[in-house]
Image (cartoon, rainbow, N blue to C red; front, side, top):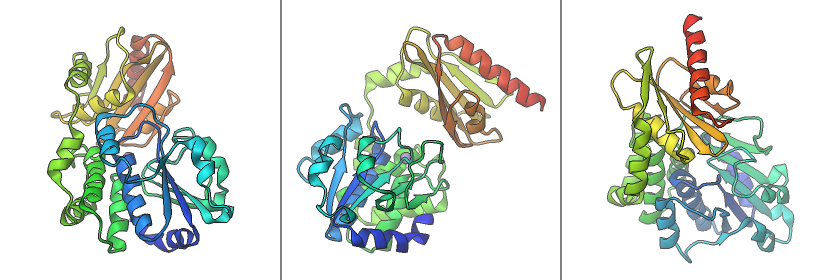
Length: 331
Ligand SMILES: [Mn+2]
């Protein structure tokens, strides 16, 4: 629990700040939004002026439900408006980056320039990469299930009374990132869920926030029509050459394939735009999918990874992947 170990440094920076800006990754999901709002509620209780930076124009279903429900309750600003809300003395402003540590993934990259290294904090559970944001305080814990789990730890640490609605959002992020407590779940994850439920988080409400669009679900399931099992434990699924999928759909199917007997590594390949083929991979077993997808210029860690390849041929990507797997087998 790195966040608990680094609390002193974190507190020091928070104490000095008057205005605190929170920013997560593009294409907000329930972990990014839940952790941002959870932290927002902690900081607000400490008497800080908080602003949540959102530039996304489209939101996934759960995210848009939350933003509607919270309408007017939290200060949301677009990146280009941040300047208007900065505290006049620049050293009194602080930027918290949540659920990502990469500059090319944040909601608004220009916002980073308003804050020097001393006034940026990253709180995340993803591996670092070449585009990681330079900052004085970095709380990155890749062992933890989700950024929401880190925020739950903070809530407990400060023994603050948290509104049950905010506890629910934090729980929703944990449920999403662990795929219902099946991935990257440790005893600490269950403990965080217990803590949040104790604070009034509603599992029923979490189910509501995680409800999916049926049409999108049916479209996504089509990615399961062409699954090849190799080495008995590796599932490779390939989308239709004529369909463009959403990146998160490839990831969701990669998660789903892990539910099946004997399967411990999954790859899902599909077009994510006219000229780009995406791969999403998951592993609970021996293969390091991060290393494998780095050969496609992708990133990630041993449990989860993704890559984008500039090509129009889904088949060629699959063939290349099969070759890499075969070479690994030979080693
Ligand atoms: Mn996350």
